[in-house]
Length: 349
Image (cartoon, rainbow, N blue to C red; front, side, top):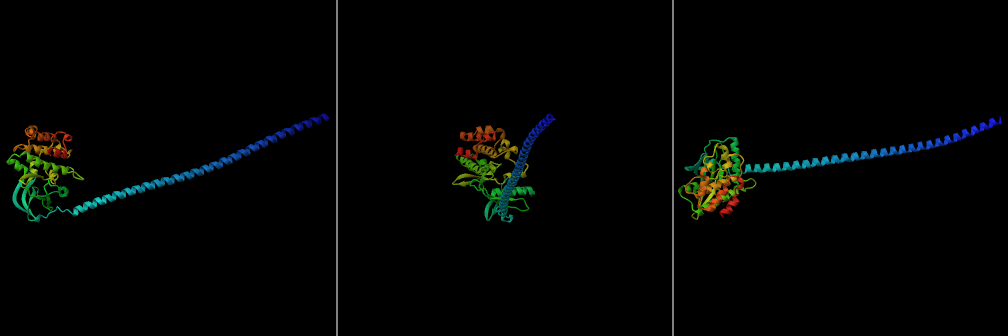
């Protein structure tokens, strides 16, 4: 009996010991669980903070994007307003030019004498009177112009009316009505072609007249904002006047050359002065340099028109070697190899 009691007490002590160990482990588990819960709450807090930070960053980014878009819109608006202002200024200038076209002359103010000064394929030149002064009046053979041709004519007259140079024939004005226009210019003594038909020029005359023509072309080529290509440099378009018994030259048709070229199917007589590239649409002011070289050849020869088929042979017959070298430079086949009119002037001087 006592032995059994002892065994029971031993078992009870063992159970009590195991119970203590179990409670100890339970406390440890509870402690770990509490730590896990605390870590979970901390993680939740961190997650919430990160979400809030992300939301703040997102809102900032959206605001920056909106600001940039607004800046772009403002810049775009400013640019468009600037473009619109420039367009309005250009339109105002154009409207002012239209209102102040002082080159327009009433046909009633032009009196034709009937005396013919010259004739070409596109029209005739008559002597006339304007404001009780003798003038030259160019009259197209065409009876009327199309609206497109009339617009081109007005544009070219606007340009011609703003060209001012002592070596350019003075453009006085033109008529603008339902009939074909009349071009009114100052009256000169005779053309270079007419003088060459009478006699050979001296070297001094060649130098002075060619220099006058070169200066006129240099002015046209350097004109701002848009250079002018004459397109019809010839002895017929160089008119002469006397200064102290010395013939001086003035270049004519600088305002009508392009206009006539576009309304006529061909330019009679101009082909003998034409540069190789003038038959295409891709040419620049170098075609005038070429034509000037041909003109200089004609001035150095005695009553002989330029002949494209004998171009080099005619140039070699020029007695003045300095003129001959300049001419060969001007009539180079490649336009890039030709001199500018400024360089031509330096050589002649």
